[in-house]
Length: 232
Image 1 (tube, rainbow, N blue to C red):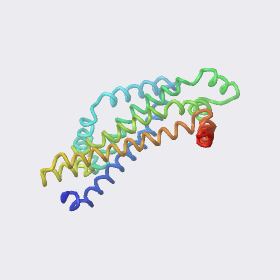
Image 2 (image 1 turned 30 degrees about the vertical axis):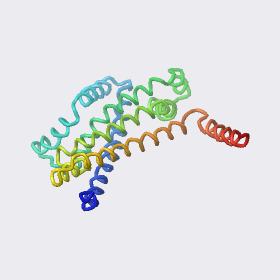
Image 3 (image 1 turned 90 degrees about the vertical axis):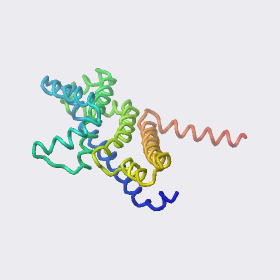
Image 4 (image 1 turned 180 degrees about the vertical axis):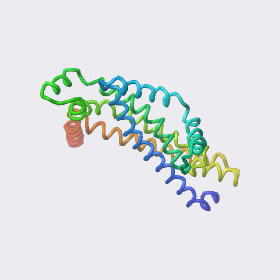
């Protein structure tokens, strides 16, 4: 335990870097993936083809290979980024491909008649998506997007391969120093577990909030609990 007590600031710094990698990579992936999904369902063929090529490329490249290509390939073309931002870029490009497919699948769950009704009252393509399709599709996208978040959390561990000082890199360094592999990687595993479970819990709360009658069901459930308690 001395290894932990003596290195609490370093561990906290690694945890903070992991959280920053995950949050930035996921937020940017949501933006890029949603734009790509809109392109995939757009009536413009070149946009659909470009988005399809993007998804097929970045969905099938291992994240570790992508991170190495970014961190060591970009300097060859004159673009130098700190390793942290190389990690964020790699997580964004990889996760955005999965976000795109999840959003596109959610859009396909909306009945075609709703979109046709929106067009009949004068809404264009983007207006129909913004005001009619996406709000309905979001209900079915919550859990798949939570899965993408968990994948981003776990994928952030691979950023240690490009010397990003997140929690896996820190625990590897401390293991070399103290030869306590089980203890150190239990700490890293606990961090990823807490982040993943926290994201899943938040996603569940959002899903209940946006589901039809979700608040009413929640209130009814609380009322039932109170009634049952009183009867007991």
